[in-house]
Length: 211
Image (cartoon, rainbow, N blue to C red; front, side):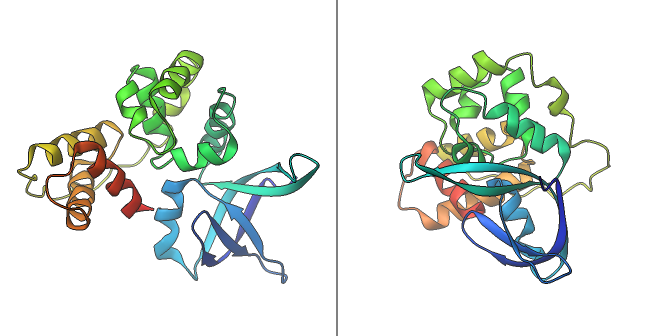
């Protein structure tokens, strides 16, 4: 099984990347949504991924296709493997739902914050409650898994005046984004939407623009 992969990031698609290690081979690697976004500026550079190999059923389960899934850290990989044990959270759904790092999702689970989980792609009200019920008490190790380095403070942007936009910003902050990141995402979303969008519409557009 391929456990780690280091090579040149040669292409990004909607859900995966192509990584070419020395020697002539090129691997397609499925990634969580947040990591696809974060790796976009590194096209042509060397990347290192922790990976897990799975078998994807095709033809109604008559055969299986090997898939390589990549993560930034071992902790992210372990969280994914735990996340997919929840009934209703398959591999593809988990990768789409991970629009933010595992630590932020784990924090929402530990705090019983179903509203924050519902804001994630592919996670509805009932599934958010199921995730909390099945994983509560099991994800504490992931909450601070991304800590370890001081971050540079970002300048605070002017908060959107519209109440719906403000609610969307607060939801994104609860999901682990800095306020500056949340406000930028909401500003991009507002630019793409019509008049008087709802908080849910703004959140959806903010996630879409980030992927």
